[in-house]
Image 1 (cartoon, rainbow, N blue to C red):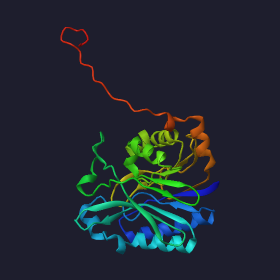
Image 2 (image 1 turned 90 degrees about the vertical axis):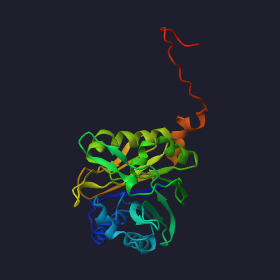
Image 3 (image 1 turned 120 degrees about the vertical axis):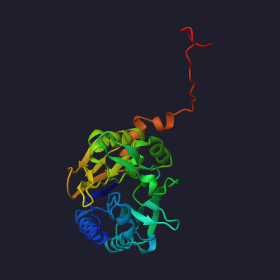
Image 4 (image 1 turned 45 degrees about the vertical axis):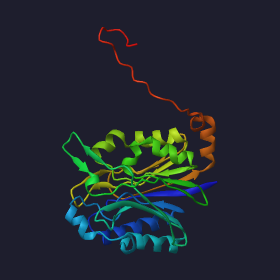
Length: 285
């Protein structure tokens, strides 16, 4: 089975209403090109590093503008619309980095909370502490859709191959990686990591990204991409500004890749033994 899938690249600002309009315009363009599954980037609703500014626009899930607009669009256009993620206010005062998948009738199929928090200090002076604001998720998700089984991840999750393997072993044939990668880490690792996850698991990878210099001063890497189960880039975008990345995903290629390299079946349990060197220079008994 072949399905036309699309990733829309955005440069979200700090105003959710403006971002919702951009999302709607790009989704409509993707559907006009034949896409029946469309994915938006991480933090579609607002890219805002100032905590007070983010708090001012936060809403609970039922009141969130992006969530409502995505449900309306999915129902109107008759597509599977995947909001890569947006910031959602939680009852405990924290925030969820939450993705949403909507069905062609506008109903929500599921949501996914980013599991791994980006807590890093980069050598260019950038410091990120997502765990200071966001509550991490703890449940991986695989949705059984009419055209394929779709696994969910978000951005920094890409550095944790065990998550992708678990979803692939649960049947995922496409794994989504909506992102807002920093320019520095994107230049170093973005495509390499995504191609590795596709190859290791024999899955399509679709990654809608934020791109360019945002209103809050942040710079994201862009290069939204679709990769096939053999690790080949089948469609990609540039590093700045809006774009639509679209491709035909041949779901039969998933089985073909896994039959050629059956590593998901060939894996074996093992233990790790640490060997200490003795004080005499010999090997410890």
